[in-house]
Amino acid sequence: MVFDGEVQQRSLVVSGATRPAGPGQDAAEPAAPGSARWWAERVAAARRRRPRVGGLSTERVVAAALEVMRSGGVDTLTVRAVADHLGTSSGSLYRHIASRDELIALIADHVLGDIRLVRTGRGWRHDVEGLMRELRRVLLTQPLPASTGRNQSGYGPNALRLVDAALGRFLDAGLAPRQAAFAASTVIQYVAGVVEIERSAAGRGAHGAVGADGFGQLVAGLPADQFAALRTAGDAYVSMPADEVFSYGMSRFLDGIASEIAAGRPDGSSPATR
Image (cartoon, rainbow, N blue to C red):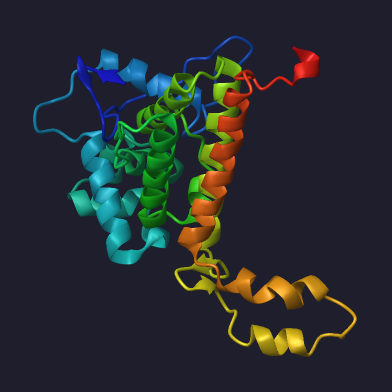
């Protein structure tokens, strides 16, 4: 996204956003942090203002917020705590950030700037998988809890950069725009869901499902005439490492896309509806 003539890869450095009303909107109703309108208002505000050299910026605020979280966890993240870290007043910070929710929206998008948009040179399938592995890597290590990120809309410059890259890879594969949109949305949601499970206290890790010790004993104590499938494949189910589950899901998804392309149906239609 362009800001002051430069492409911002890490975060959109803007402040002082206003809340103009759109058609059918209440002029007093602020845009939800992280929404498309919220980001659009910040872009418009950034174009109007003239930042002071060496003055407080949104980029500095986000960096300070990350330091606050690293020191004390997400529960310590408040506008006052960030202001104290910067050695300024909450009033000064409110000219850049209106609330804690806005801080979280900015941080969530800032983190996505770490995704590397690498082309493998081995075709669309490897490019999609490489991009999604990058998304997984970044989401697994981001400082915000998975539930916090889930509650944020993804319309910041770095989120749009990811979506643009995903759409581009599927369009390169030969999918029609609508099917490229379905494919990009599905695969991004798949990765986000997998990561949320991996990061949960009862998820799946490098050695299989969390809390599975004693699984064999548990199954052995169940009624002998029930849970036949668990007796056959349960050990494999709880022992599968997260990396292998992720790879399996990605492969099956990409197999489906490849089969549509090979069948000459890049728009996803069946022979009966063409």
